[in-house]
Length: 201
Length: 222
Image (spheres, each protein chain N blue to C red):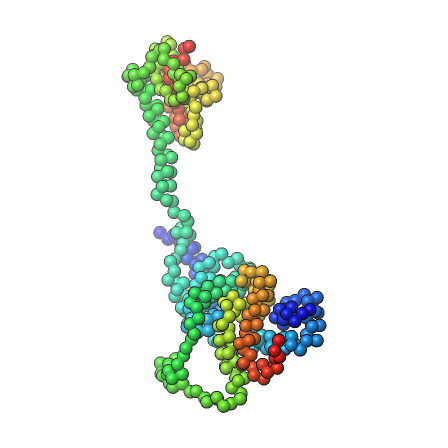
């Protein structure tokens, strides 16, 4: 005998999974990117992003349809990332330049490293600057780091960040101020021309 | 506005998160202070640099891994989600049905045996025994009537055993008497006549499981 209740529940489960899949595909880049900026390590970022989505799925029933899904999701993301990043502490991502790269087809190739050490453009090289910012971000306390990432990379307002982080707007303002101040000091060497202009306070 | 105060507001100024008043004061100070202006420019630089960081593409396998983990989660049906009755609760619901019936059966059986076979189960009954001594604490007394002619047998229906109330047996005035119940049931007919008729009515009313009938010691002559 076919259990109608079980069939209905299974159908509900499948539609829930389909709905969730579309949301994951929509937000996965952003969630992964925040994880990468928070951890500074691609492997760890992937773990964090996966864990965030699994947690979101588990409490997906508590998400009220019609409300902002991204805020709800980023709240889970924020709580998880801050806790995890603090727990794991900073494990710097070290990648050997001599290590051979495995291609998608399974072939291994040598890494090509252009010698740009004498080029003045190196300083302004996008990649170099990103690494500089990334290492500066890693020096910040996780709460400051997350507030700055949500503001500058994800483009949220202070009010939205306060909702996501579960704090007051005043706390958000303070975290961003102190986070940016830390970044200014650390990134300044990456802008030699600019840093020269900053007069001592 | 001091440099310290201005520099504390510069981030919010860059983010356009200040009130009009604060914004005007910061702008005014920046126009006059090169040092704070340099901090402002550097803050703007940092914000721009962060915002223009090359986004790293998400690994293609992310959703596949998430899906695998979701599918590995225990599948919860609504029935499984419903709170399961605990063993204690099951025992209680069983006892709630059985205990009143057992008590009622016992209470009915004792006077029946006494009346049909003339056996005094307790061996305590006597025509002069007071059913409930006023000095003693209330207690349940079940005694047979001393004799046919002396007994104006009283049945008392005590409601509340099943619902956990404690019935006070020291006074029958406030309790629901079976005599009255019988009279109500037999409207239009004459009142209780013989003990057999009373027992018949009593048995019929016992079908209502919410009522427990207690026969209080027979002798009422005072």
